[in-house]
Amino acid sequence: MVTDSLLKTYAESDALDLAGLVHSGQVSPGELVEAAITLVERLNPALNAVIHRLYDMARAQAETVDTSAPFAGVPFLLKELASSWTGAPNTNSSFYLRDVVADFDTEVVRRMKAAGLVLVGKSNAPENGWSITTEPKLYGVTKNPWKEGITPGGSSGGAAAAIASRMVPIAEASDGAGSIRIPASCCGIVGLKPSRGRVSLAPFGDYWYGGAYFLCCSRTVRDTAAYLDAVAGALPGDPYTPPVPDSSWLSLSARAPKKLRIGFSVTPPNGTAIDAEVKAAVLATVAALERLGHDVEEHDMPLDANAVWKTYTNMTCVQTAATFDYLETVIGRPVTPGDVEAVTWAIIERGRSTSGTRHISDVE
Image 1 (spheres, rainbow, N blue to C red):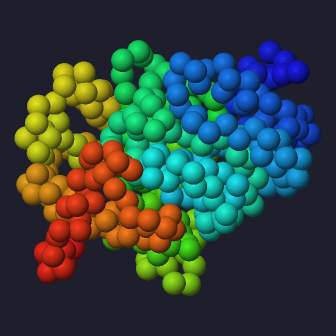
Image 2: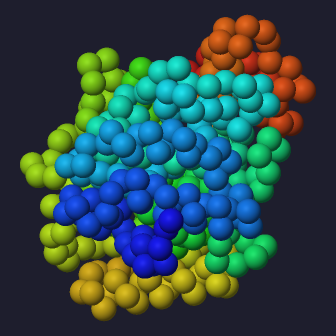
């Protein structure tokens, strides 16, 4: 039986606070799991943020989790994209992969487990992560908990909606073109895209030439910093190895920042109009940064965003096509237009029809 007191504490706490309760013996990992399950069952029908509920796995893991780990017993969601957790569905929100269940752990998942995170489910994402909204045909639309009719963003929209509604305090997210940052903005939570190579993609080498990486969305900056401490680090064979800080990300996040020179723009570089509400939010942030003592300057980006996006899209279409070439060896048959959404099929065809010389030119 989950008490109202526990639910209140759970909903008001960030991940590190919940782990602290486990460390001190005030609650057990099992109690946190039951609190998460209660809130998922209560809130998810209206939001569709969690598309695989893995309660039996979570209860079993809670019994054996290391109660001294940094995130001991903290309920967690894995994004339905790429990362593999043994025994969990791994469909990429695609009909083509709808029956796939992971039979191995990716390196980042091994680090999640070592950090004490307990998997209670998987969060919704668009097919193959190719959208800034979260509405795959396989699993349906995820909604924003703050306002009806508003998107939670994408591609990590399920993760963001679950955190904003307090189902879980932290969840895996990934970002190749805004897929952490957009949902974090839409849902009012913390989202950081890590530097390329900061988190190993092993056993896979690279996604989108260092453009796509995995981290999390969370309720607080310190949770994101502690999560980065838990999962960061390159392995031999990783294509990128960024510098390592001289102290933990958690301790760095607690330091008072020096005076910063910050640029901003309210002129989209692709020539589109900006919504008045968005512009007001940017200017309010500028004012807040100035009150904190930072130098803030308006500076429009001197680039042709449409040309940049076309080149980046060309690159990523080729890599997506190559991914499906690999997946065909896993599934044992060719992918067909009926296996994937129309936009995914268009991406595959575009990638497969791009010449090698064109691709190298785009990469350069």
